[in-house]
Image (cartoon, rainbow, N blue to C red):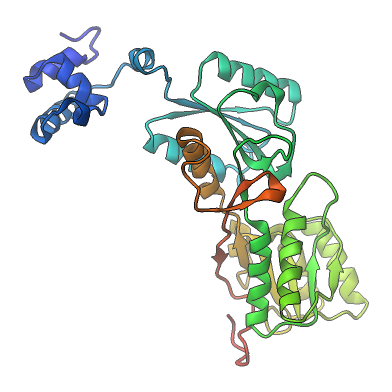
Length: 354
């Protein structure tokens, strides 16, 4: 009999012609342990689907000592159109594992962050993902010490907490490789300052770029210092070009800087990629909107979010063990940065776009 119109486990068992115990084993994924035949399992699951049965999660949590929920504490990730891709990836992985993602955003307020952490712990979530909008070296919140947690897009060098970062250093090498393969090995400048703060992307990208050029006996020609935003980049690159500087290649520290760079080059009558080859970072929609489309190293945000859930549920030595680890960044799991194809780099020797 249903209670208040809700389909119960007894309803499923009676319709399928099995005991409640058998139905419970099947619907909780324990058929193998109970020696239940595949035919019986299929019959019970078909009946459950036909009746629209939904398990009682409160009862399950009492049996298993889990709540099948994962807490996520962020600074500005949920409200950011680009960074929220991490949450999309985490949500997909949580659903695959039959878990619910519960998200709390602090907007950078430490007091709000701690209250959200307390709320997640009080609700007995199975684990907490601590995520930041930009890749950071940051302190692991004291309130999370002793809990099952993963740091997403950030790390604490002083705490052995599983953490996940994009592989910006190898991404920098990849950006350099693209220009070198096109025969652009001299007259290459980076666009965007390398901030001296807790952000790690700029320094790691620059290190990879410099390493790769050095391996070819070359060196970057210099850096156009500016914030990683369209307007300050436009002003800095335009002023630099107006002094007669003519680069052969530019590596923009992100796609927003590439927007300002494109506009400054165009205003100086320079063509991309005919006169100047351009490579960028992030692989955001902005890179695809530019004309010609910018070649960009992709921030693997969805993959990072999914990996955070897998590490949280599988343990720090489970999922992701095949990824590179960086001892300088707290042993963080480094997720590779693929290439977003575009038309902003000239092809070697032929002059056609690559």
